[in-house]
Length: 135
Image (cartoon, rainbow, N blue to C red; front, side, top):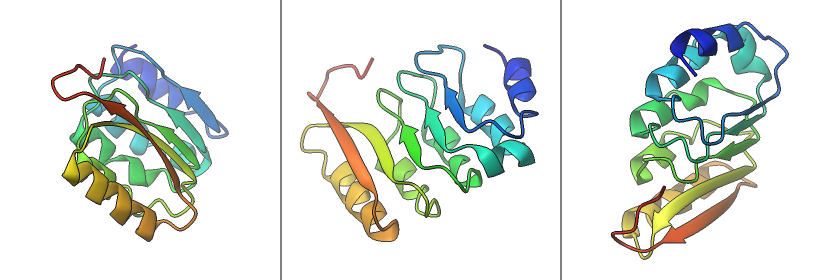
């Protein structure tokens, strides 16, 4: 999967679901390209980025462009609680899946703040042991 391929997806103005689970080529720059696609940002409701290990906090910061997003899978992405706080503008978000190191106070606080900001949001947290890879 390349930046060019992502650019082609951005031209699909009626795309409501995008499953990129496990795509090793999906990176922060891919998300930034998608976030600049007006048709896609207004239509996408379900985005699966699970196991896209090159997605970091930087890429997640571009996700609020997808105003109608209802479901977001960030399991096994390389993100922190800071990334979750950038999702607060997504008022339609209903389900979010993330990984967290067991007892990570910052992630717990970020989840709590996000849930207060987005009424009705259900956050699924997959716990991983400290030192364990999220891959």
